[in-house]
Amino acid sequence: MAENKRKIAFHTLGCKLNFAETSTISRSFPEELFERVSANSKADVYVINTCSVTDAADKKCRQAIKKFISLSPDAFIAVVGCYAQLNPKEISSIPGVDLVLGTNEKFDITDYLKNFNKKQIAEVHYCDPAATDSFNISYSLSDRTRSFLKVQDGCDYGCSYCTIPIARGRSRNPDIFTIIMEAKLIAGRGIKEIVITGVNIGDFGKSTGVSFTDLLKELTSVEGILRLRISSIEPNLLTDELIGLTATNDKILPHFHIPLQSGNNKILGLMRRRYTRDVFASRVSKILEKLPYAGIGADVIVGFPGESDNDFEDTCSFLENLPLSYLHVFTFSERPGTIAEKLPSKVMFKDKEARSKRLISLSKKKNIIFNKLNIGQETNVLFENARDDGSITGFTSNYIRVEFPWDSGLAGNIRKVRLTGISSSGRMNIELIN
Image (cartoon, rainbow, N blue to C red; front, side, top):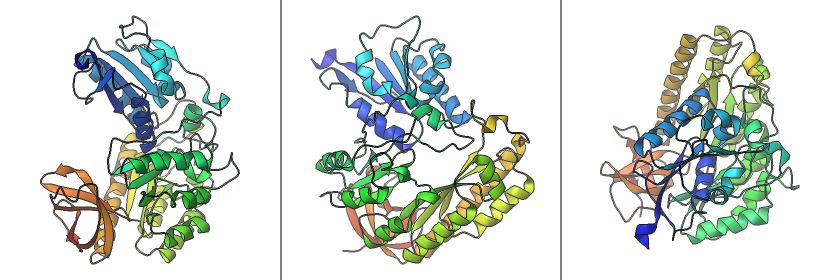
C-alpha cells in the first residue's frame, strides 16, 4: 500500500499563526493515502501557505511557487492563505498553479482535491472573510518541544498600513472550553510549551464576553503543559492584570513581544495605532517593575510615509532609552488597498534602508546588554530536539537562546541552568544545575 501513497509537501511563509494553521491542514490528509516529505524534495503535491504582510512577503511567495513548479513540474500545486486571498488572479495566472484557496477555504482543502491532474487554468475559491464568523482551531505538532496554538483570528483595528483585516476578517475566537480541550490534546503528545498565537490575541474574548487573562488562567491548569508563552500583544491591551498574573504564575513565561511600530507620536497617528509612545513606555516600565529580568521585544516600522529625519531621530532616541532586549525591524512597503498607499511624503528607498540598518544595529547592542544583565542568573531552559553544530540549544523562560554540548538526554526536556557568559555564536553559555 505504501508505494501507492502520494508524496505531499507543505511550505509555510510568514508568522507563527501560519505555521499552526499549516500543521492543522497537513493533518487533514489521511496518512494511509499520503506520505509527508520535506518541501525541498520531489513531491506529487505541494501546499504553499502564504503571507502578504509586506511586499517582500509577496515576492517570497511567488519565488516559492516557482521553485516547487521547477523542482517537480508534474506536481499538483495548491497555493493557500493570505496572499491567495488578496491576490487570487495574480497567483492563478502563474503557469503550473492548479488550486488557489483563500484564508477560510484552505481548511477544506481536501474537499477541493477531487483529482490531482494538472490544470490548464487554476481553480480558484475564496470568499469575503468579513462575511463569516467561522473559526478554525489550529495548532502545530511538527516541533516536539513546543506547539503554536491559535486562540484568535482576524482584527478590528484599522491600521493604515495593514491588509490583515482584509485577508482574515473580523476579530473572533472560540470559547475557552474549546481551547482548553485542544491544549489537553497537545499535552497528550508530550509537548511542554504552548506558544499562544493569533492576529490580535489581546482582543481575545471580545465576541464571547471574557478576556485574554481569563483564558491564560484556565490554560495554566492544563496538566502536562509547563510553559505558556505569549507570542505578541498590543501595548494598549497589555493590562496590569495580565502583567500581574505573569509575575505570580511560573507557567506564564516572562517574555513580552509588543508591537511599537514607531517611537514618534505623529507617525503613530498617521499609522492609526491606538496608543501613544507614552503608553508603550508605561507598559515596559510596569513589566520590569514586576519582572526585572523579563525579555521584552518590539516591532518597529521604518520609512513610513511622512517620517522625516527628525521623526526617525525621535524614534531612535525613544528606543535607545527603553530597556528592550531586541527589536524586529521592518522596512515600510505599500500594501494595495490601504490608506497608507495614498499618503504623501514617501520616504526614499535609500533612506529606508539606512534607517533599517541603524535600528538593526541598535537591536544587536540591546540584545548584548540584556544577555550580559542575565549572566549569573538561574533559570529554566526547554532544550530543542535538533542537533546544531555539535550543540544542543534552547530558550530560557525570558527568551534567551542558550547552547550546550550535545546531550540527547536533554532534548525536549526542561532543566534548571545558570547563565555563565556569551558564546562566540552570540548565544549564552550555561551550566546545568542538578
